[in-house]
Structures are given as structure tokens and as C-alpha cells.
Length: 458
Image (cartoon, rainbow, N blue to C red; front, side, top):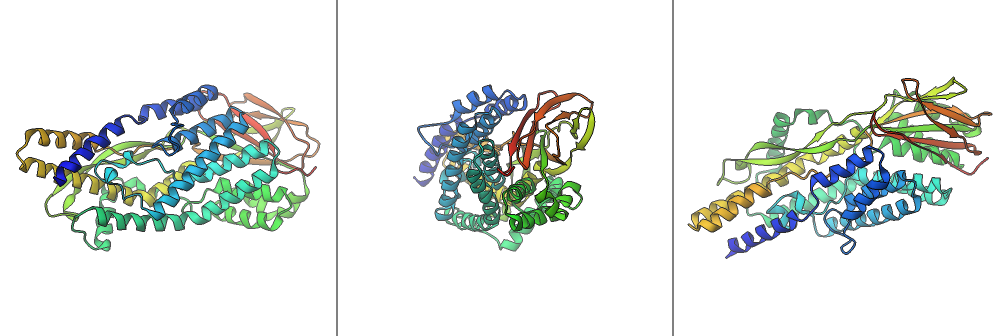
């Protein structure tokens, strides 16, 4: 009877799972945003949000896509509203994980991570608050921007504690749900690391930045503090950013000459370049005897990061054909994503292994029951449900670039591509400190350019 009930859950979860968004739906959204077709991207993302169930499986990811599309479609109020919903949902998931445990979900253990809601990565939340801060700057709402930049810093501070607590909760709930003989944690971790080294060797190179820190978000918070008479806070954040980016001349100059920059009218340019990685699926043979003596080897499905193309390697800033400044590589959003992916990967691998082992053991039980239909059902379910979770916010950039220059008596500047083609003329704001923000997803599509005040000082 116990196995019959679990079989029913198998089939029910599979039916539910089949009705959810597919990877092709997300990649269509990615393509629309990569083509800078933000009006259609807004429509597409909006059509997949379940407004009757705020915590629907894919709602958070669709809201991240939607909020970002609305921002670059210059629908700023709508973007803030959407990101507010996404942030509330992310908070709900994190509170639920720590109080209940995300692994305490029989459907997820008996199927795969795709059946669970997309709860967001820490870099998702950091970029969500960063975009909200930029949106408030666009509205000249400096109080709103201050709240969001403070949330960025607080989110980065709390991220490691949340990760540690959630992983411990997951480990506890896995022991409750699974009647498998578990080895010592040291042996288990050693086995997993050996498998990762063998099947995904490039993962070892993914540690680029401190865990759960986005240098760009840190830097923007520093510039905002600098422009709003919070010099000590700006100095602290710039020092932290400079320590992560020791070769970046712009950041090092900002930190070293903070007093001069506070006093002089300055314009910064941030350039979002290229496309963030996507997740694809790979399968590896896994030694099931790590957990149970009833099976030898199984095949598990795991996500694998796939790097994607960049755009132009730098932008030039000119006035009347005179070069004023040129961007330099600031930081890698891809690197931020890789850093977090590496930290979480052993847990993802373990969940996939335990899920597949459980299904394999139940398949053996079905065979021993001498019921052909039950045997067929469990076999088909095992095949169809062994899938990696490849959901990820792909419309983030690959890299960030930075430049700055003194405003002096300039009224406008022109932005040029490396090939000498002018893409935009920016009318400078009558404020002391401002930010030009440029996004170019691919070499083939147009740039989105805006200028934002960092403060209201003249």
C-alpha cells in the first residue's frame, strides 16, 4: 500500500510538472530581451505569470524577467511594482525554507528539483534590489534608492548565514524522508567532490568573488553614498570593492581620491555587456552504494553552466570627436553566478542522487510485485522525471564595464563603439554626480542608454 501511494504521487507530480513552463518558454523570453525587443518581452513574461497563485512554481523567475523588461522598456513604475512582488515572494520562500525545509517535499524527492518553486539565487535578489535602486534614481526618488541600496548591502551580509542554515535544514529533512543508510558526512563529501572533479572539472575554477557578493552592486551603493553626503559609508564600500578588484583603475582611483571626487562634478558610465550563462543538462553515472547497498550505479541528471557570448569589449566617450574616457572591464556577472553555483553544486548533486536512488529502489519493488502495469508505470516515470533543473535568470549581463570623467563645462557626450560608430548622444544632467547606464546584450542589437542622477546636489 505504501508503494502504491507513492506511485500515485509519482504520477500526480508528473502531470502537474508537465503543465509548467518549459525551457523553450524561458529561452524565448531570453531571445526577446537579447534582441532589445522589450515591449514584446513584457507581454511574453506577463502571459506566464499565474496571478491566481502568487507562489506558483515559476512565478518568481517570470517576475524577474518581467521587472527587468519593464525597466529597459522605460516603464519604471511598473518595473518597481513587479520587482516588489518578486522580492516579497523571495522573502516568503526563504522564511518557509528555514521554518519547514525545502527538502521536506515528497514530490520533489520522488521527482526532481523542477517540481519545486523557483526560489531564486542570492545574486537574483541582489540584482533585483540593484535594478530597483536604479529605477528609483530614474524617478529622482533618492529616499527609495537609499532603501534599495541598503537592502543590497544587507542581503549580501545575510546571504552566507541563510545558505548555511538552509543547507543544514535540508540535510535534516532528507534524513527524515529517506530510509537509506547514510555514511559519515566526511566520507559523503569526499565522494561527491571526487565525482565533481571527474565529471565537471571546470567547476573548480568558478570561485571568482567572495561568496554571495556582487562587486557592481557594492560599487553603485558606494557611488550613491558618495553623492549623498555619506562619505564614511562610501569609503567603506569603495574599500571593499577595491579589494575585490585590485587591477581596476577606475575603482582604485575612486577609493584613493575620494575627497577630490566628492568635491568635483563627476559622471560615471556603467556598461552591461553580453549574455549571462544558461543552464543545460548533463548525465553522469553515480555510485549509489554511497547511500544504499541495494544498488550499485545509477545515472543522474545535473545542471551545467554554459557560457554565452559577450558584446563589444569597450565603449568610448567623446565630445566633439575628442576622446574623454574609455570603459574598462569592471566585473563579471558570469563570475558572480559561477561563484554561487559552485557553492551550491554539491547540494544539488546530492538531491539529484537521492531522488534517482529512491525511484530506482521503488522500481525494483514494482518489479518484485509481478504487476506489469505498475512496473511499466514506475519505469516510465523514472525515465521522464530524471531531469535537471535548468531554470536561471539568463537575461542578466555577462560582464560589467566602467568609466568616469569630470563633468566640468560639458553639456553632452557621445558614446562610440570600438569600430568608431556612434550609438548615442547623452545630454548630461545639471547635478554634481550622475550615472550613464548602458546595456548591449549582443553585437547585433541596439543599445539601451539612460542617464540617472546619483543625488540632488548641484
